Length: 156
Image: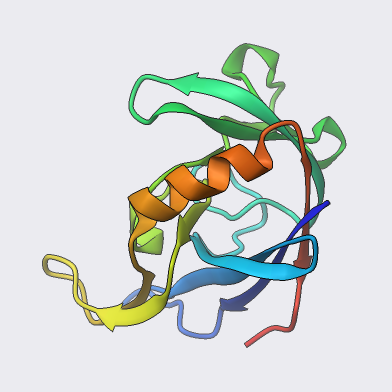
């Protein structure tokens, strides 16, 4: 099983101060593989929240924007693969794709090699992941056909 152990920065969010996001580490067979970034927890709302903790199937998904990737699926946690399968309140197309900052994501997960502080076009300095495209290319073959357990390490 693949494990995503995450931590999050909730305390920073306000009207004037966007949160850094949720960050985590992916472990494969108990060994660290990469870091991740997601939106912060916002009550599992579509397009603005990280997905709930739990176990997910990782299903092949063809995205117009991101190409061949994987989607998370666990209907019991209100996360399904396709919009046509989603009922009111369920999330869909929660993907693994390349991104560096949490504000570039809409409920998806982006892997990266390292964590770093940087500024992105008009945003304040913020924590990000690096080398996301390369890390994603190395990660996807390990995830295909697997289950992903997402859990909290601690809250920051």
